[in-house]
Image (cartoon, rainbow, N blue to C red):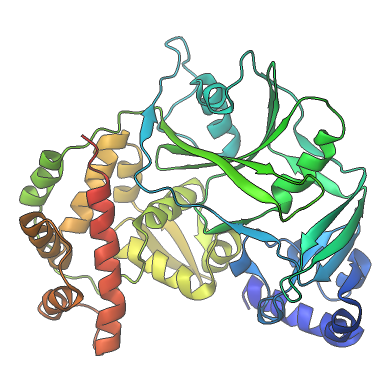
Length: 429
């Protein structure tokens, strides 16, 4: 049974034993201890939901979320606890460089959040982004929250609910203090739709009460050679739900210049292959296919691991791992009846390339398939994306695996559009 199913089953038992839904309906919340949770499953596995898609079924169905309030206690309510990452269209990627004397950092081998942060510091990304000078790394790791209270939006009533925290555990990935501010960083290597605001809010409240300088909560997401930085502010420090994006910037330590002629060259040199006996992709965001390959390249992952550690449900895990396998980037083997994914030789070779050659290599893998090759040719000829009907027409002539019904053709045509749009988005001459 997968981790999500185990969580679902354990939470269902807890909800039944303690009549949690009735308590929430009458009081608006329910406090639960780690010892109560442990009656059915390990608490650390039962309360870590970094994205809304990771929430157990009972939470998702009833629009509930859980927050820690002490080192061993949690509160469940209709909390508006998550925030969707903003999409800033046509945001440029600024090129930066590592100092010439740095030999121990390899911009092509960022295997952890800590190394991504170190590279961002060494290349000047962080100092420029937070607009401060003489920055130094200060507090990081796990620590106590101390005591504070806050208001948070209630998704059911639309009103604010009061929550009190006393010595909960918080964790800060990195903090950089400069002349005029302290920036607290949450760093991730996985691309996600949203994040748990608590990851920024609890550390913000702790340090906002301890120093006189402004405290800047910053989210850093590193993937495929791009450092995506988001600076947030809490317009009302006592209001968890007052989160606002201040700015977002993209940086790269590598050359990201790719021209139309680069793409056309890959297109013309692509050799069309026979369709593999793997389901045709239903994975609209190619950036996340790449990101999945990056995560699997660090260590082999089971299907459950991918679902648990990434912003996927079980169905999306199948779609995106199949998409990577379709391109020959991942391999799947069964160990004790459990599917295990590992990076293929081709996938690892591409990951080891510099930014520009890496993107063009991914394009080459995509464009070796007739559907994508023909669709991109139509796009470049007309300057607009081929219609859904045109793409479906190409798909029907391409001997695709496990695509038969009209509804399936239509759904999977959206992945063709998504991958073609990704290729076009690389052009930044």
